[in-house]
Image 1 (spheres, rainbow, N blue to C red):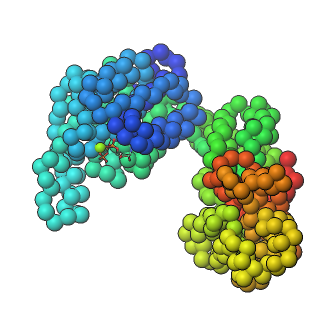
Image 2: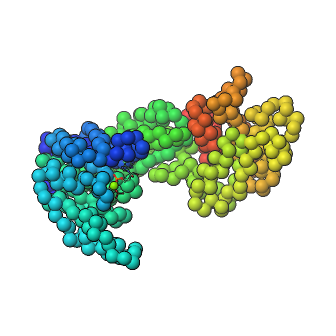
Image 3: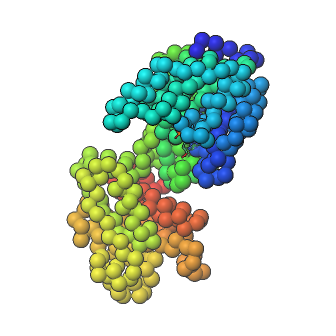
Length: 430
Ligand code: ATP
Ligand code: MG
């Protein structure tokens, strides 16, 4: 599209979102599409101004489009491009623009070919509906789906109509829409890096890098919480790729130096995956002994493809009896200190290491709540231990949050002990 680099104001373009679908309107599903998109458009310096959610009603969709067209330079529309009767977006777009629908022969051919490659019977006629587009629409290819994404102008606003299915929405956005908007925002090159941190609060993270941010206005800083992690996103926008690359590298290096072992990975690796990569590189293994987390530690580790190379297994010992039988925790220690205690956590980790033969064994025993707390050991009291080649370490966590948060933070805390044992992080980081 040639005419979309001319925002009406001559200033930074204004972007709005229209989200369609009864499911989103009723709260059956959350609108993750807009969040995903906004997080990528914000670093471009675009002015993100408004999101409107409408159900599957033609009148509401039309109005939302017309209203956005009167205010915004760009509008990203999600959903309603499918073949069913509740998919009204194409019709509404044509009506809002005051133009007829046309059959896109190219897309129809593609649809038929796609159908033929997957099934024996010919494509039903009602699927041809998906090749109908507003007269002036230009197709944005959707490699993963049958609904075409398209772009068109209504009033002075350039619209991008995208399928609601997150995988398709995200791919089209990243490949086709973000580059166009980056160009419209006057930026020729964008380089991004997300530094993923644990063991640091969002405000502490912000505080740690504030001086770097002030020294480097050419890089945008963003903060995102993905409990219990906090992520720092760095976006370098520049006139050319080489400058963007260079600016990003300088700032990333400074941030990594300041944050040290708190940065466990970058650009979408998971915490367990980053640990697994380290273990694999050293040809070491890990095992778990869990109580209050009910196997969540093992779940995080086995979620990683290829984890069998470094994950030996886990012992889920919820009762005192099983802690004794499977991990050799002594009845006396349990009686004297209680199951949620440093000696029991240590004994669990050592027992698991001995029983499994893993290089590292972590143990988690705590009170996840909402019941079971005492004044001595309130909900959120969690003892962690890690037994490894250099002995056993233990740590007391006093967590806040609901049961799910306490369990997740406990599992992360246990894996963090292994990172410290490997020398990847230090317990007394800034
Ligand atoms: P389809 O061909 O599947 O009908 P579509 O473009 O018509 O695609 P919708 O019917 O609106 O899209 O949504 C399809 C599915 O995508 C929904 O059932 C929902 O699971 C998911 N989805 C839709 N909108 C959103 C959104 N804003 N955020 C996250 N997921 C969404
Ligand atoms: Mg649909």
